[in-house]
Length: 184
Image 1 (cartoon, rainbow, N blue to C red):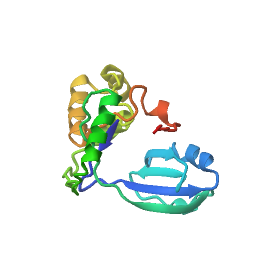
Image 2 (cartoon, helix red, strand yellow):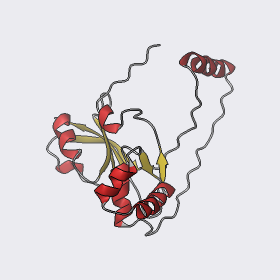
Image 3 (cartoon, rainbow, N blue to C red):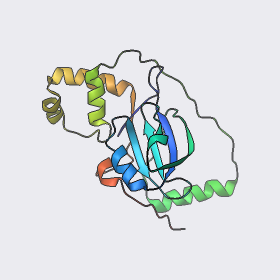
Image 4 (tube, helix red, strand yellow):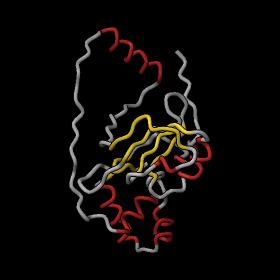
């Protein structure tokens, strides 16, 4: 996935909401161009939304209440080293056993982008945002641009995005509905 870095002229908004018929609301909102990310959940809230502009959810028939909302800050993805689960859990347990916890702060800088993204770059971002592994020749045909122009647009888009791999290997659309069960 490509996730945009927060810039002076670009913000995203996060909503944790409860609803009456969350599936119907999900099906309608997933088609809304303002929605960057949407997930149904269970627990303290029924749905997580990330939008590229503020939206009024109170007009939705299925809406109950907002649990929490606000502007999204930049993503912070730590580098994950390769290893097996047993080794990783042993390292985590050793760290916890030491009890040497220190508070830390996440650095957050708002970058500058200005009017650097054209409509073409925005279209390319929307095309790649949920699957950054798409084939360039198909993108070129679908967007109707030359390879050189596609590479220039891609370079501008990459400058202001973060690559994440939360839905590897099958992509976002294959993982919309999932439950995580972590045995202890």
